[in-house]
Image 1 (cartoon, rainbow, N blue to C red):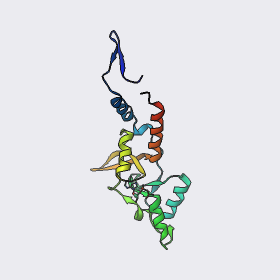
Image 2 (cartoon, rainbow, N blue to C red):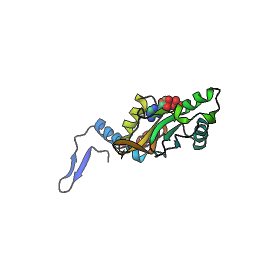
Image 3 (cartoon, helix red, strand yellow):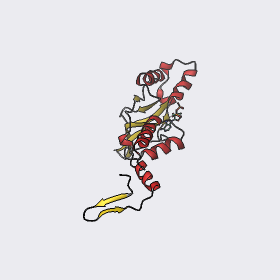
Image 4 (cartoon, rainbow, N blue to C red):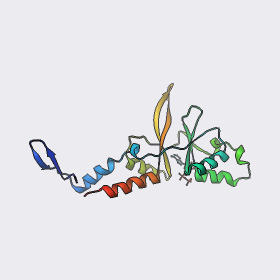
Length: 169
Ligand code: ADP
């Protein structure tokens, strides 16, 4: 079960030649985004900053993904983006969320097939809290992205805890 030994019919048990480092790495790389991703919370590009703040509280998330009228990923809005917008004197219902969002093509994404480790590295490298899990689709000659999930620091922590509980080496 630890991976040091393997069995083959008519051969019996044999030493796999893998050391514990290799086996741990294999186990870590087996954790795939699609098995851990959470439901994405999306908001329309035409919504206001006020709507964004309400959605953030109602859905109990830290980041919203903004979609255009075709349902494709247009941007990302974080807690601090909303907080910054709220510091101004303007009426929050008058500020479109599209003005304050980080927009495509500057969005860091991941796919369902990527490993959890690769997704975690993106969160660290880009100093962000959340990644939209996307599926690329062709729209004419443009590639656009549908949002099919969400990876956050919580997602990664869940994977880490599960790994710690499973590890047999
Ligand atoms: P907070 O701003 O609440 O600390 P983040 O660290 O996630 O949350 O966001 C920092 C900045 O990065 C924000 O301006 C946000 O719009 C942007 N951002 C968040 N997630 C992404 C992402 N996946 N790709 C690109 N930019 C992002």
